[in-house]
Length: 345
Ligand code: KG4
Ligand code: ZN
Image 1 (cartoon, rainbow, N blue to C red):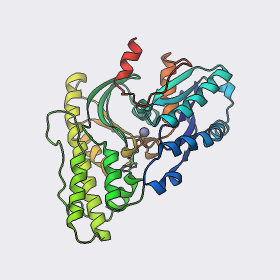
Image 2: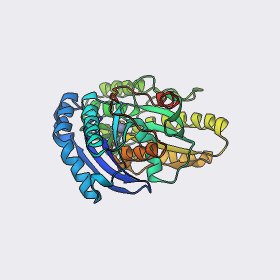
Image 3: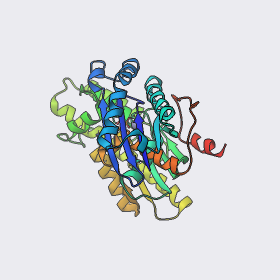
Image 4: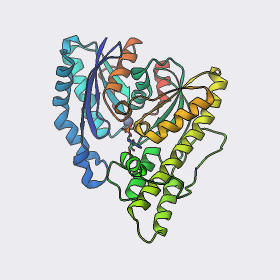
């Protein structure tokens, strides 16, 4: 089975070809970083226009680099949401056109499901598993029982953890995009210098809250007379360790619940852009070792937005006969838990 995937829900225009044996035949990403950098964040209108300019060329490259033609494909998958709707429309319309012209099944992939199933593209992971999904827009703990089968254990009550990284970077004057900048600055910092809060730690549920942590960083900086390079490094390191410890605490609770529902042994998977963070990966590795869970984190390139994960989700759905028709309407908001009803109906 060979599937072409398209991703265009944020600021990456991406296309990839993946087969049923988990081989990534091509994985092309055009990052719009330079176009958005002057604004310190993604500008939806600029993103949509840039997707339109680049998508045809990126799809062509993905097909060529994979050494296939459209007639070799068994399906075409594209992100159908959630995300910036202008970009999602561009990717989905491109996919629909290819499906129509080449008479291929269309698979409208939930972007979060792309992240959720990326672990199964990267490693031999069977259902069910516990998923910590950490990205710029999402921060959730879910039990993944199969494609389209998600039970939400908890999520953030305010900011997503990636958002907290991005806002902290801005406060510290670090370059966009924030997550990788904070991680880089933290390498030279002292994580014990500032005692930032660990919001929600110890609570008997699986929810998160990051807005208080961001506010604490802001207050601490405001109290310093000047902001030296070592202050920035120390604040970045202190923020990063606080975020990592909160994720570990919440994941610990989720492991307890997962055990009750699915038995003592399990797998903890982390996915989404923040899963590229080394400190967070190490902290979760330690948690898994303590609890006897297996830990799987896809390689960083499959954690941040990419089309290989969309193509792979397409492979999984196509294998189950879960295709969509050309009337599919892209969705700016599309919680994972809603996928269950879609299969049931
Ligand atoms: O999954 P993703 O690429 O896009 C969304 O679907 O949101 O995640 C992007 C988020 C951003 O907030 C970015 O700052 C964060 O992931 N991120 C990181 C790192 N790399 C990306 N956060 C912390 N450490 C990193 N190395
Ligand atoms: Zn994403």
